[in-house]
Image: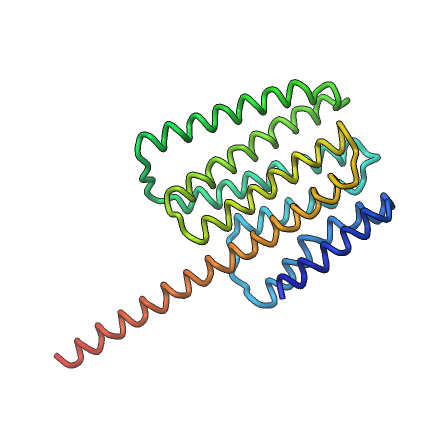
Length: 242
């Protein structure tokens, strides 16, 4: 059912992009989060506060981005996305209980982080000439830094646990990263319908993997509760027999 919702939203997005109707194109994006969330809450009501906060601020960012004629609302959209990524960092950081990485992997992670930080600095230096508002330039830097930090922490989580949950989270983050890069390219550098379509599709796929991640976490928690209940019932039965 989740896949059906994903394909329907992707189809609407493709039609909106091909139609070249700016209003229709902008109005489709705010549908992404509510449609997925409504279906999810009907089937499974367990959701972490940090993930719920991400979805709330992500929706605010999507909704505010519709009003491209208002510079203030564009800035509010960027700020909302910054906050949403920050809550995702909190969500994945809480999963890393005991970090077990050797010196080689730790050095590799530091090197990757420094390279990404340098590339971000170069991109920031180039893109500030294309963004007219200084506040938006600052928000671009903060949002990009939050995305790099999110990608870094999710990659650390994957190396630390190498579980299905961590893989889903990492794929989701990568989708959001590439979607954000394509958004800035098509907005400030080279407008291309293919880039716009791919940006929306990647954002949708990222949300799909987010809800898949939540479902997988809930399954793991339910499995642990069942095992704990079975273990405790066995202990009670042994005690009664004695």
